[in-house]
Image (cartoon, rainbow, N blue to C red):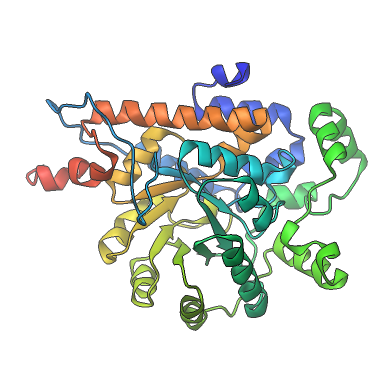
Length: 386
């Protein structure tokens, strides 16, 4: 662990380190939410307000963080969420994150909007890699899914909450996009962050690796990159499209972006293997319900495993989500901050922090086994009169 990593004691410490390391527009791209960012705040407030009915006189001398949501064992109940453009934080950001997740024994979810290809990530990582799918159009989605399967991915994560782009005011004000748009302000900001600038110039500015012009038709590739950056997806993709995807994908299929019990039940009825409760980290609809609150409605509605993301900022937050019935959590921004601040060592330090926090919360809540968190820490089940 790096010297900086040793000084990190909380998510806030890592966020501050990333803010120092990144140009303003890049930090805003990672940090921001939709509109006035109420959904972003709501996600985190839900965890701040959450409580755990700690059990007493429980033997917690031997604590186990492992969970098995879909058959394979996670060494801790938190995986790396799909995040586009990780290369704006560090060159080869996706590969760095995938390798760190493999060392931690948890899945890494590669975004359609990644800056490394699925083939390169699979070749570099010995861990479990899932592929997150955006549906630009049915044919492009089919090609990407086949490509991911052929590369070795066996879990596909369909993101269902991007019919259009969220109103991300920070990005619009900064003119953030790929390729970068140079202006005197952007150049001056880059000059104030020489380490970041030198790395980017040495490795080349990031691009969306699955849509590089040199890999196919130049005009089509440019159009696809622009569509991804503006979240111009197939707004007509519906339940029929999901049913078709389920019929074609031979592996595990998860749907991310679910916030309602009826939608979750329809996913399960169509043969989806699991759902991920998520409001896209508060980056799409400002008026969205907090992801943690949506877990309460979704979990009782389905028999398939439920994961969640949105607002998880500590290992203790992860235990709260498991107590609500989630089988695991996906974490995004904290890993990007760590990547930006300290690269590979920073991501390892973030995993170590999350594991330590989760372990402490387990001991203090009287929950020695992560996979029994809901049974152990659901208040009404043990104390019906309270």
